[in-house]
Image (tube, rainbow, N blue to C red; front, top):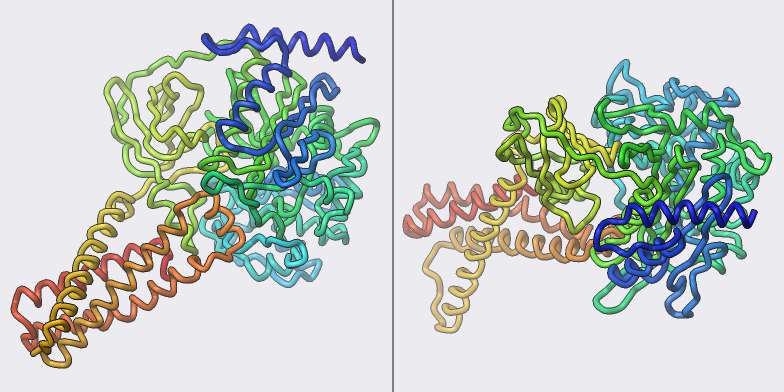
Length: 634
């Protein structure tokens, strides 16, 4: 065994050294490569700790911890013992559990999920929004069920506060906003529902089912979906952190009802190594079979793709193309913890990394993908393919595009004001995209060359994007699509309306306040009628309400890491205060509009003052119209 390990490390190390980019270190083996990457990440991105495991050839070939698991105690990360919350990597286990029930004949991937909800007398069924187009079990595992994305308040800070899975799904069923099976949109509710189906047909609580039928057979003794965790696991669990100025603060929000999506799920790097070994071996490990080879292959095989020219998604596992080689990946993000799993099937290799910090500007989410990509590049040792430009028109693709993950029902929709993607046409059949298309948060602009009909490749990179039926699709993320926006939904237009309206309101409030203070100091009373004074007070109140609401919203979104936690927990006072202020302004604005009409009818003030008052009324209406579009009223 030691000889095999030495040979494997040498082979991987040779490939790594041979393919290193000019000017970068050329590590002599895999350990040196990963050491150099992770140690740099922890320092540059301000992440407390990490754990990495690599498996290959049916063996674990590397398992190593970096940094600290607990800042206060100074506990070092141990890849074998330190527990990390795995976030959405838990969805891989959920898919395996569902497929086990398919294998046993208790679930049918093509069946309407309402069949099982009704048969087992669940407290709810899925609404028939699209008659004749039911949500199937398969849709749940491919992120194509069509549910709206609404996650505010779906997490808790403490395990004892978590609701029961079925109760939460019944209470928080989102709207169906698109027909199932047509386009992907990353869907936590759908996967939570898939886990609940396992509960119903097996008669076992989801966490207990996984322990008995997946974790124990695979020997994953330090992995748990229970709430609270067993004492032996809880005492070794890493703390999760986010930067706050120059210090690190504890992140909260890792528990909740939706365990199948990742709430409460904790694991170690070496345990995840065992999961990867089982996946690479067709569903078995050490003589224990948790899933048949046929369904394991189905889990890894493409089950849906937004565009056939791009990688797709299996059952939860996402396909990615790296230098022409197929990768299967799953990323997990939860407050204070971020992890990445990648299988390289044609090298019989798997890589898993977990971090216990959000990092500066949320960079821990990118760090894992960066590590996985670099290890894959060095492992494959193949040159990057140069893009072959094919001349053609590109103007038809220009415009703004918005992610299908954008909520249709809550104020997280406001993220689309800054996260929409702008596509502009350039010379020589090129495009430029501006916005968060890249998984690297430091990259906000990318340039593309046309390589086919509606197909583009990034200049100097491997990313590809495709356009079809008014949508933009990205090769590196088959779980989401971007929908082209009509002109009146342009985020730039909305930003201009908000800023212009707010400017009018703020200047007016300031001018009226100063005028009132001057009059008060001089002891002079206003000669205007009582109705005119009330009208101005209503307009002043409207301006104050909307200005304060804007300030509260700015405070809410100022720190992306803190915002992530606030959204998961739903406990930020700002989340409740902003809609209250905007709703109040809605009422006062209605009164201001009435007053504006009366002002012209009764000739309150001079014509310039009446015109100014009308402008304030219009500014409030425009502000509220945009705010309503982004659900800042509800």
